[in-house]
Amino acid sequence: MARTPEELVRLKQEYVIPCIKHYYEKPMNLVSGSMQYLKDSEGKEYLDFFAGILSVNSGHSNPEINAAVHAQVEKLQHVSTCYLIEPMIEFAQQLAEITPGELQKSFFCNSGTEAIDTALLTAKLHTGCEEVIALRHSYHGRSHVAIGVSGQKPWRPPVATMGNVHFAHNAYCYRCAFGLTYPSCEMRCARDLEELLQTTTSGRIAAFIAEPIQGVGGFVTPPPEYFPIIYDIVRRYGGVAISDEVQTGWGRTGENLFGIQHWNVEPDMMVFAKGLANGFAAGAFVAKKEVADAYTGPNISTFGGNPITMAAAIANVDYIRKNDLAGNAERMGKVLWDGMQELQEKHLVIGEVRGKGLMIGVELVRDRTSKEPAPEETARVMEICKDNGVLVGRGGLVGNVLRLTPPLVVDATDVQRALTTLDQAFESVEKSMTPA
Ligand SMILES: Cc1ncc(COP(=O)(O)O)c(C=O)c1O
Image 1 (cartoon, rainbow, N blue to C red):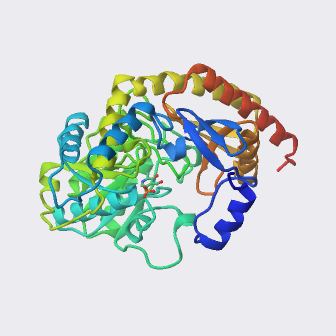
Image 2 (cartoon, protein in one colour; image 1 turned 90 degrees about the vertical axis):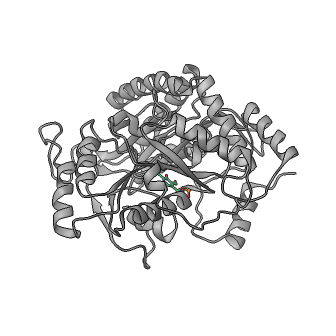
């Protein structure tokens, strides 16, 4: 007999560190998954529109990926990076082939946080510089270093994090820091980077790190000019351009395999985790040869690039490409986008719909004129959707953005079901809202 959610909450409170939070006032005990569906301990089925935080792009317990993992477990489970193993080297070669531009040499570890940490270290070794530029509203992980480059106050503990980080403006057009409107703003947020570099740095930087679409930040999606302007400035000041593809990678944003490709710029490094091995615990970065070659070591990652996660990653990439999941994300993303536009016309609580492919953010506000954020209403919408069998995620600095990111295997029927459920949830929440 499975434990009840109430019992799990009680045990969690007693035995798990309190910084680990879970969703929902009334959480469920999830016990199984199959592609875009999950089941709880009481047999209730859910349509998953969050994909385990944008991780199972190829679906829960995907049979083809699982078969590759089972076969690898039977053959060789672990040896560490002290030994030569084929899956890691094969996948590194594949990464060089499928990533854009001159990205060539990879590092493997167990999470996005670790990959970010080592990517920054490598950029520092390559440039001989210390200073790093990150974006406001960004999130890059939970270690001292990764949280130190994250422009997210709620996730930053009030104790020392990495120094020498300067936070540039993101392109949050819905709440422009300069009070301007795109395109007449002439991309003031991006151009401001030069002023930041000239006034707050030595004039030489190690790296610029950014997510193409800010995940935890609530899917803030820059206009097309943003990254070309930023990358030009970064390169003039000697910095390595790092694209954090932890959320935007592996077909998520539609059409392309990687998010930054929508902005027609070529990063010097790309960082991966989450969807890299379809939810198996793998992190990685790929870098231009001259950048990667700056880190001669020694370095070891006991579980990095291990046979199991690499077998999963190889099978996952194969599945994504064979089934054109990036194309499906583009097509189903359009159905979701169009449906959300209709819901925005109907529901005043929807302030903005943004994103690309199957990475759609819905910012909820208590009032469209003042744009007062609506975090409690966002939590209510999530709870109602869950009760009605659809799981959605949440983000934004104050938690007022719904994150709609199903596994990329969904079809139009699934998208319509999510839209209908959201429509009902918005209606119910709006009924209980007092005028702001
Ligand atoms: C964009 C981005 N980078 C890095 C990370 C850190 O990844 P991990 O949780 O695997 O350490 C996250 C996690 O949510 C993320 O969203």
